[in-house]
Amino acid sequence: LHPFVGTKIPAGVTYSRPIVMYNPSDQLLHVREVFTTESFLNLQLPAPDGAPGAALGDGALAAADAGGDAGGGSQSVKPPAGGSEGGMWQIAPKSEKEIIQLSFRGAQPGRFQGYVHVKTDRENMVLPVELHVLRGGLHATPHEIDFGILTSFEERRAIAVSLLNSGSTPI
Image 1: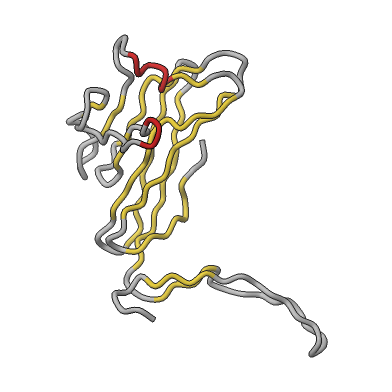
Image 2: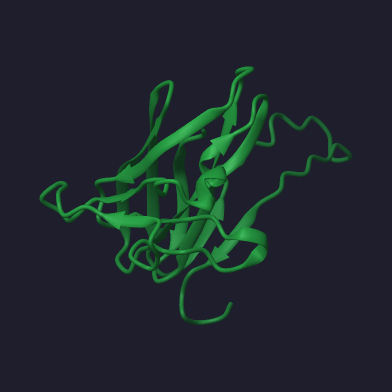
C-alpha cells in the first residue's frame, strides 16, 4: 500500500486511482474490509476485465454505513458471504492485487485529507490520502528550478517542467 499524498488535481475533475496491495508472506492474505469515514472519498470495486467498476450502493458487494464523522457518512466494502467474488478479496503469496478504486471529485479549491482503512486477516492498515484541488490557472511542476552553477556559456542543463492549465481559457 502506498499513501496518496501531494496529488494535485484541477477543480471539477474526477481523480481515480487503484489501491494495490502486496502480500509479502508465504500464505494467502484475506482482505476483510476496506472503508473510509471521509464523505469526499469514494470507494469502487475493481472492474473485472475492463468492465466498469461497481460504485458503493450500485451492487450487493458494497454496503454504506450510516455512521462516520460529522462531515458525512462513511463507506465500507466487505467481501460477499460465500459468493463467487470472494477471490477478489484474496491476495496470493508474494503477489500484488488491486483491491479497490479510490475516486474523488473536488468542485472547490482547497486541501482535502482523509484515510482509507484496510482490514485483513493479519493486520489493519491505514492509508493516508491528501489531495489538493487547484483553482483555475496555469500550474507548473516543479515550483522551483535549480540549474546549479553554470560556469561557461557552452555548459547546458535541461530540467523537465510540466504545465497544467486548469482554467477555462486555452493558452
